[in-house]
Length: 309
Image (cartoon, rainbow, N blue to C red; front, side, top):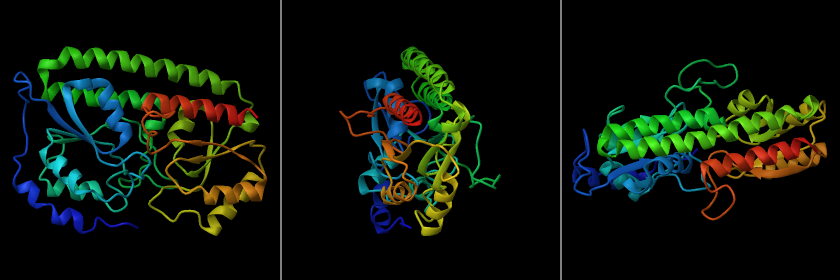
């Protein structure tokens, strides 16, 4: 398991040189809000609402795992200077090595004043056999209804810090959530037409619980969350035995995990890997899936196609 390391400590001196922002931002002078998002998904949702009204920094690079991350000097600096910080919460950045908790504490940032969980208000799903804080499944954004909650929470805090642009944020929020809502309705209809015996999303990490609940497709996995052991022989054996009792036609592998364990499952079951899908990150700019909307559309299309084989 990765540790925060010495980089964060070495650059804490940056923090002492920067005054922490508080209250409303004076944007009338043309000074933009400085906003930090912990990952590419939250950053993209923020960008869709805020447009060019903010200076935005995304911490975890595209394609990397946000569960356990080691902030770079630039992340430390941007966090210390930020007017607003958006993080997922529910056991994502604060689980594992708790990199985000350490980052905001060292930056002397205050929860619900400087940094906000965009998942506030989501109907939380817990890891198997768990029901306590710190044991939540963090992947709420894989249900588009929750993506709309994220967007509303982000807009609320942008307006609180920058009321002079309230109408701009509200219009963008309306347009964006209408777009997500339309895709959500289309997805529910799409999965209604797949035979029940084929409805099983099989991935490496067990990150599709929210998706399963939203679209009526059960899920199975090799390991449950990326902060645990990943792809052990016992985990692979358990999944292989389960899949031999099903008629599932396709497997899937996530863009931000090692695909070797799923290749082993595929070989042992003779079930093909249909596609790589997105979970913890959007795609690189210019590629299919390079926004939250296009990532979700891509996932929905590929999963529906794979399960219809």
